[in-house]
Image (cartoon, rainbow, N blue to C red; front, side, top):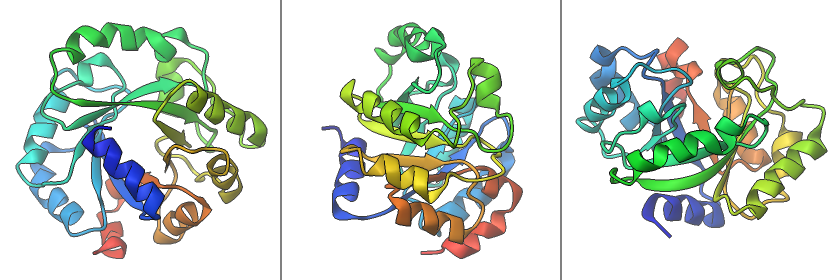
Length: 241
């Protein structure tokens, strides 16, 4: 069991909640890195995720290298495409969009990435990615040409997550999508959590500490927050160590 995954797995077993700050290279100003990462370091964040649905070539490499100059937190790639892979990071979520039926995002992109990953010094963590409707059309849906699962179809969400675990995926990521108007409900999170034996990641639509705590209380082992910090960095004040 590799280090970053081992840390997440052990935190889950010990009931320690984790927090990842997601930085999208396409929306982040590189000149703001020092000030932003200082706030991340002073918060309860345990990981930094880097990635987005559509990112310019080399943007991820440049950003990750800059981030590493200011933090010792593990940097995990959350890639939307092969072009976002860089050895400057510590690990990569090898995402399979199991909520959709586009073969490119189930296995096609993965095959194309192998030659790059074989040359990269990255911890690769197989991750099931389940997109669930969050009240808005997401970039993920547009890029992947897939529809999110309905919030009302909880059994389908549960069965999709469990199928991913049966396939051997190491993490399960429930996502309402970047810029979601509403976060995932406690019922959805708890229902999936009760069925899984692997760590559960939850993201999308979380904009305040109450919503963060709600996700944790429902069973999320690691919560990802991105848009909230992009729109209002004062949110960090609620999450100080």
